[in-house]
Image (cartoon, rainbow, N blue to C red; front, side, top):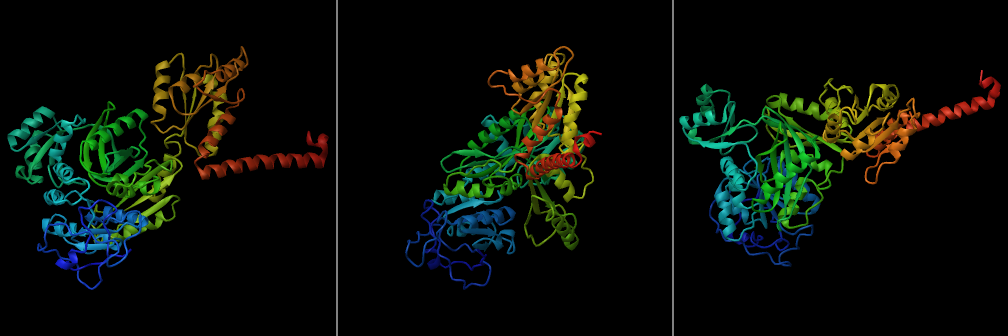
Amino acid sequence: MRARLLSAPSAAASSSLPSAGVRPRRAFWRPRAPAAATPLSLPARASMQPAAPLPERQGGLPVHGVSNTVVGVLGGGQLGKMLCQAASQMGIKMVILDPLQGCPASSVCHEHVVGSFSDGDAVREFAKRCGVLTVEIEHVDAATLEKLEEQGFDCEPKASTIMIIQDKYRQKKHFSKFGIPLPDFMEVDTLHSIEEAGERFGYPLMVKSKRLAYDGRGNAVAQKKEDLSSVVASLGGFEHGLYVERWTPFVKELSVIVARSRDGSTVCYPVVETIHKDNICHIVEAPAEVSAKIKKSATDVAEKAIKSLEGAGVFAVELFLTEDDEILLNEVAPRPHNSGHHTIESCYTSQYEQHLRAILGIPLGDPSMKAPAAIMYNILGEDEGEAGFFLAHQLIERALNIPGASVHWYAKPEMRKQRKMGHITIVGPSKASVKSRLDKLLQRDTYDPKKASPRVSIIMGSDSDLNVMKDAEVILKKFNIPVETTIVSAHRTPERMYDFAKSAYGRGIEVIIAGAGGAAHLPGMVASLTSLPVIGVPVKTQSLSGLDSLLSIVQMPKGIPVATVAIGNAENAGLLAVKILAKRDPELTDKVLKYQDDLRDMVLEKAERLENVGWEEYLK
């Protein structure tokens, strides 16, 4: 696939282009002769009526691919580029409208029309080249899209949705009407009204522009009443259109990508955590380390929000997680999103392929993760011009030596500070492993296995069990698996046990090893409260030598499984945890195999010595 820059179509040429109003799989693409050498500049001189569909066998062969519909994209930035890359794998023709001749998508689309996506005349001309029209940026001429829809052109998502999203205050009012949880907000248009808002919501106070606000632009914080005038001025004044929100003391920022097909069906990607730098998305961790309850709540809010909008496509729903575990909607993007970049490598269906499936009426793909963990790092401009390019290329060079890392360079012609120039996705067997690899990429010496998020928890009812249970930690550390060890009594601290078991999954714990001494209820009680695998270790006691503990573990009722090992053999519990983790970690599997080989070699060495020297000498 290569980009071609074409001159404006003549009236005769326009009549041979596919109609925007026809249904998917009926519009066909006939490549134009590459006679024009100059980029397309779009004058307003053609009729707004959709062009007649091209007969299947007239003037050339139809397109053969997943869909014969030509997809037009308003915008040719990095999102448009990755949409085109996904389309190329599916045999889908993509045309883009973007004012920059060397925009990122221009190198991978079928045709690049040079024109402004906020220019109504340009959008009308461009629509005649497309079977379906979509966006990779919401700051487009939505009024023109609405008129095109009235004339039979196919726009996904719908113009009504883009209009709602373009105005963040209108967006908040829309979602509020549908009962979506939001931070408190209100419109302000005078100094008196914003002072009233400050009295009502308190400080700090978030002040936002209604339109054209993204990547931290258009947002400002007033720490106190005296800051209001300067904050308003920094955002262009009240005439620019402002509103305020109550400050949300969130503990995490989350995001959910929701795909909605033409028939209204939806699928949701796993909840991710977004980490921002100077109000710009900097790192995305997938999946988010939150409890199953919070994941469900976040997904429910996101899905409900998208079902209140019209049209097909992929939508990103940005959310706040508050200190009391409440989910609040921040804002929505009606397109693929930065928080979904990782899906290219980490999910069975990327958000870009999913967007194409959705707008074309192709069955939606599987959004689940095929890698246990992923982390996405935005390559932001660290300096201007060539100095910035040099630093970015150094980072890319290091990334090429990181296992599981994939580089996406957007090929933007100009480097500026804090500009998104590309991203790097790292996939791996665990969150700890991908974070470790990111630290290596960024040349950070901060990674410490002792401070890394634990993958295994070792718990016991009393410190009297520690002499046995320490062997599990020793073996786990031998395999470089982050581990935590603590005391949790089923009888003396039942609330602590409950909180531990309920929070373990959300904290990233993957296996629990529970010591069972005395009454031996700890492994079973914890297993009844968590979805994680629990391995019980019977601990020898003075009264029944650990037999009571063993019998307690193996007699758990149906539905509450607990694995076990020999009495006092915490080392085997550690090894079993290692093998559970190794099921989806090739590197760890290799270490387990080497460990087993070492055991075999040790036995063979002993056997050879016994055979050579005899038992008398051997026992000396």
